[in-house]
Image (cartoon, rainbow, N blue to C red):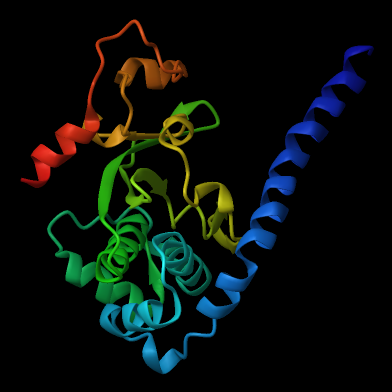
Length: 235
C-alpha cells in the first residue's frame, strides 16, 4: 500500500512533462502555424502549389519545415482502413497524390509528402524507412519518417506520429510536437532505420541494442562520420 502514492506521483510527473513541452512548442511556433494553416484549399492540390505558398511566406529553413509539418499534421487524416497496406511498388508521386487528393494516408504517404515539400522549399530532406518500438515492443510493420537539414544540423520528423494516434482502431487527431525537429539521439529510442547511416549518430546502435532499449551513445565504439557518408551517398 505504501508504494501506491509513489507510483501515482510518478505517473503524474511523466504525464505532465509532455504537456509542458507541447505548450512551449505552441507558443514558439504559433505565428508560423497560423500563417501555414491559412493556406487556401484551392492552393493545396499539388506540392508545387503548397511549396510556392511556403516559399512566399517563410524565409528560413526552420520556419519552412515547421509550416510543412503543421500543415500536413493538421490536414492529412491517418488512413486507418489501410494502415497495414504498405505500397512498396508505388512511386512517390502516387503516394503524394493519394495524400493530397483524399486527404488520407499512411506513414509512407506522410513522409513522401513532407520530404517533397521540403525539397521544393529548398530544404535538404530524405525519406527514412525502418521500424519502430512502442510500449517496449518492436513493431513488425515497417514505418517511414523524414530527415531534414536545418542550419547545418540534421533533425528528424515523423509527420504521421505527429498528426495523432490510433486507439481501438480509430484515429484521433492530436498534434504531437515531440515528433517535430527531433534530435536523432532522442528519436532512436523509438525509430530504427533499416540503414544505420540514417540514424545520424556518430556511434550507431545495433538492432539488438535498439530492441533492448540500450540507445545511449557508446563512445567506446568506432567513430562513424555520418556527415561524410551522406556526402558520399549524395555524390
